[in-house]
Length: 133
Figure 1 (cartoon, rainbow, N blue to C red):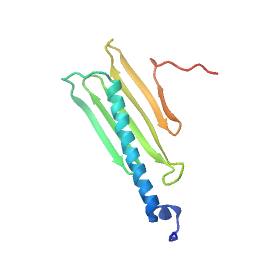
Figure 2: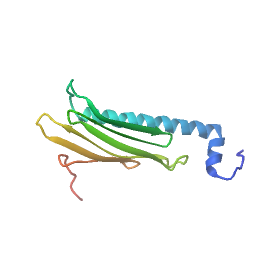
Figure 3: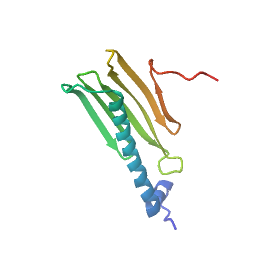
Figure 4: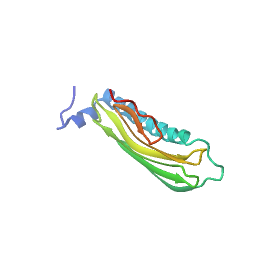
């Protein structure tokens, strides 16, 4: 059924059903990118109407992405993601990033996180830590 051209990757892209699954995975990855960005914005609370973008960068490719931005009101976020094990049943998006914001109490809070096949794993000085069993 497959035309042998030397690698499993070529077999993966030659079968229409698998190619459609790859397209679905790309859509899922882009959805996750938007979700993570929106999460960072939501976690930052309310924004000042006068906030200006100080820095903004983004790069989105078929198997990875990165972005970095900051605003004059103290909001900043950066993340990078890579599609691991592309084309296999173990395909997963691995994202590492952080976001920070100035809360109503005037303090800047920062969350560093990893989001991968093991779930979303945030860390921050202000976040509770589960007790070690």
